[in-house]
Image (cartoon, rainbow, N blue to C red; front, side):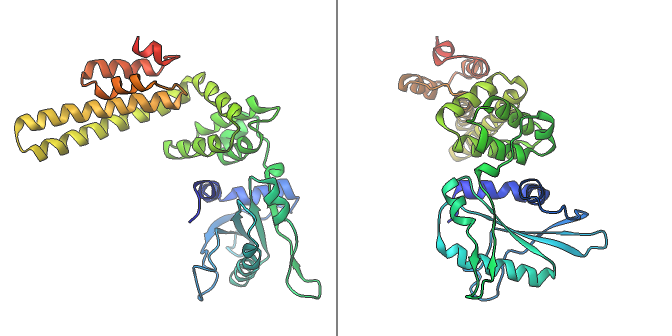
Length: 313
């Protein structure tokens, strides 16, 4: 089963169809194709054994007359598996036959070791026929330090943060990344920050948390989302428990307990997102509290507190 990292990287190219083409132009020097019409193509490359011959992502660009001019097979690779190199030519030649235009194999990996393995030519016969994968490894991930560029294409900023967030330009890279997130919806913003945080070093991850804490507009946006989500879950739980009791008293108690649990969960989520850890005693105090007013006060304090002691003192 594909890992979260595999699917999250792939989603960058699904969410922004022009990303693969722009990277082929910028990082590999390919001629810029016409991008009048971009499409995601079917990823089933044969009618026989579809599970064995299903690629990650197939894209195509068409000219103004809707004629295919270039196809791209995007493959995210996290480790060295020789079986993939036997399957990639199937994906490529099938897409070429389907579109009747040139095609390119673009392998995306955050690992230098995998990049070195994947960039070796794939021999098709003993006469010298080969397929040359274009490998987007960490050394080829774009470097984005301009907030305007990040806002234009947040997915490029995500790749930049993965590869360069712990480097000498880390602060500029991560700041641009956060600027790019402001141009995405909440679902993609959360997914992108989880992806970057998973791949950063511990020190760079803490630096990202510091930058988020100093970015009120972004911090407030994510915190508000969690607050609303927690309250909604609490109300839903309260209604469900109240119905199960079948009595007016049970409904009231269920709503109160459910709402309290929802607010407590929101407090914990906001603190965790800001890198503030609670002791076992503090977690117990939070979980056991049913005073709605007190919980709502803690929730407001969680947005600005600098430590757990500030919150519970």
